[in-house]
Image 1: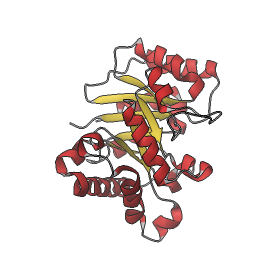
Image 2: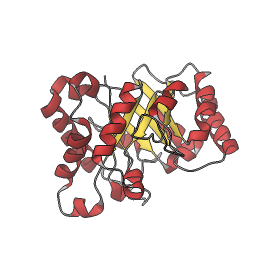
Image 3: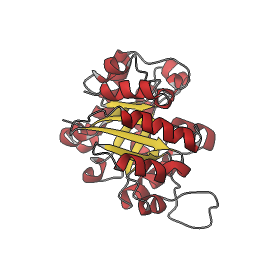
Image 4: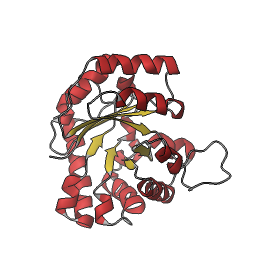
Length: 254
């Protein structure tokens, strides 16, 4: 079975002390992950070591992700963080191309291809985000839009590297708006994304790649969304900041 993943994206929220308290509350619930299930905490840079220390004391499948990395190996880029730096503190996952990074920081598909390569070169699994804005959805061009994101950022990879990726589909019109794609819309797009991957890499490789849903996942809708055959968990924003909500989402993994 493909990996089923509950990924928490804290974004730019919580003080250090609040983050510690949130983690403690989640870990105290002692949610048992099956072998094919993972919980990943994507936290701000200053909290990476604290979070890694907290989750590595647990025997569950809990891991830490950075929310971003820079698209160059090293150099005079004040304020940026490289994939090599993340690897040096044993961070194993990194969110790449979140819609907020694309929109607010003008990240392009070509830039994200560079980030993906640097992560893989440093033994970091990219959680690669794709998704369409409302205007594209309303025009009925969402399939071509997300397919192009995959093709321009990922399709230079050989199959053995592509098989290690995690994809997160974000309907941008459903992030932070309280709107959520219907289960039918989520499954339809996830199935389409898997078909695009299969066309490039074959059915076996496509069947190995987890595709997470990332649009206003909540405790109340997680089980229904995750029950879709091609939805392999969620990249969770606001609900990941509430211990009880995120615990419920973790328990909803299939």
